[in-house]
Image 1 (cartoon, protein in one colour):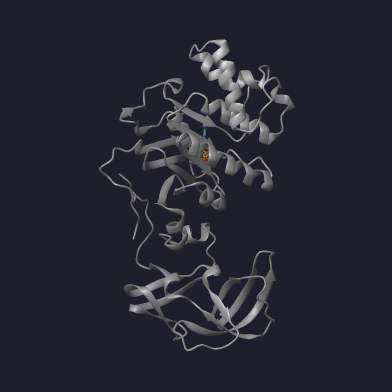
Image 2: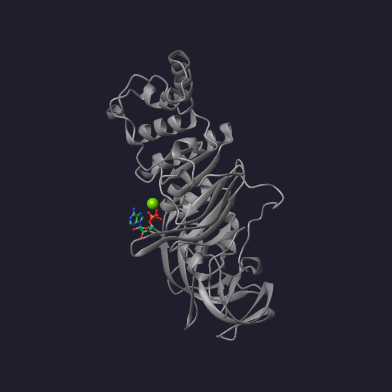
Length: 366
Ligand code: ADP
Ligand code: MG
């Protein structure tokens, strides 16, 4: 049930992390981490605060040395290559622009380091500023920029050198929600234009889902699941992953092939064949609620015991049996009264399970 990388193994991975470990006094920040990233891919490194995301990124960038393990980019082992020779750009939560340089000089800085002449630098910096929608900002000082503008400059400064790999460490977490969405679009547009391989670190599951083609989910220094956003949502490898991705419905059952019997003696039909004790989960937005009975399988009589309007959803709590309540998130136009009798339909394709006997362990991707 533990996932491996869905990509073809015949291609040499662009970035290959093999058995990376980093200890700090009293804490193992990263433990035996294996990960492959393909050229041009966007991968989100997701996990709660303190799980080792930044340490992983810093080891790739070369600013932190791993205790053990190997970092390979395009077939070259990077462990002993200094950061400035890695062809890797790192953007942090705050851009850390040089305050005494103009915006244009900040953007052109990497070209200057590479010996590119002034006229060419200025021309490229202006073109780059146009790409991040900061036309006319070249003469400003960083102190004259808003937080979002400073992050655009940091992106422009990173991309101007055409790095092989763009690392973003929570680049949007200091920005307010509306601006964040606009910046997410901008980053995705720049990635599509340049084709740069991108690793974005975030603790925000919604951001990881919209920003990436694959998510590497990390807890306590270990990778737990590496999959597409859809798979992580719909087929989490354990309850911790499911809860981190916003799962709220969990209940025990006994699986007899595709028939799963709940402790209430209700039986659900599933797509998955299994035998033995299981923990069942279904995402709240996948439960359908009807006011009239249907003869369809997986339709359970229920009573509405809570009804919360969130603007985009109506979040219902449904009592199925004394020991079984489920959350169903329906469209806000569907209204219900507390105490109302309804039917909850749990589509077989939406049911997922974890065998009780398996203790979660880190995924090894190699
Ligand atoms: P994240 O980015 O996921 O929030 P970090 O990689 O920053 O996590 O940190 C992982 C763990 O390593 C945390 O317990 C953190 O306190 C610890 N840590 C990170 N950097 C250092 C350091 N330079 N010295 C000591 N401990 C550190
Ligand atoms: Mg961090």
